[in-house]
Length: 279
Image (cartoon, rainbow, N blue to C red; front, side, top):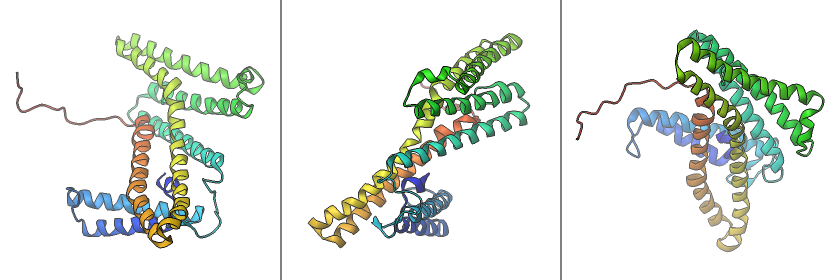
């Protein structure tokens, strides 16, 4: 994800070298510990390598075009880069639900694994819904086609999956005599209806940042006529490295923690107990 947003051979090399130095020296900068510095260095190395890889695909180094794009040019094929990021997002969400299914099988919660909103039925719902949405978009957003041909089958799968998730909560609530089970299923149903499409569309930010990075390439040329090419190149690269490079990292972390991890992660830990209660 970082490379998609910040594809640059030269700046990626700088980030990689920074990560190597931090990983090796374990120097506690910005108030972090040595262990945290080592972790940050490892993350920076992988981000830099990803940036270099996509920089080679985009044909960009230090905000300059060094060769024709091998993969895609975000600025010249906006629709193409959006498609790439959406397909990537869908693949990552499918992987997250697959992990959740395995986790629930491991703890022997077979109902959640098979009939949960992020279980097998949720996975089937998501894939069928994605195909249905694709067919609607392909038809020029003619929503009447959902009642035609193979789309009727897809619609039936989507509706049946939602009903199954809700019924599962009712049955679990009756068996365990817990109202929370029903509320959980209602929340899962709302997540299937609202969160899944929102999570998928959220990956478009990868395309937006990839496009923004290429805009800076044009800015170098524009500023070059004012400051001179070399001063402009150095200044814009520093700004992009410090601001755009940092922002791309935040977005990659955000997608990993919120869109991806929440599909299977179950938080555990030690309950917070304050040393002193002020009355």
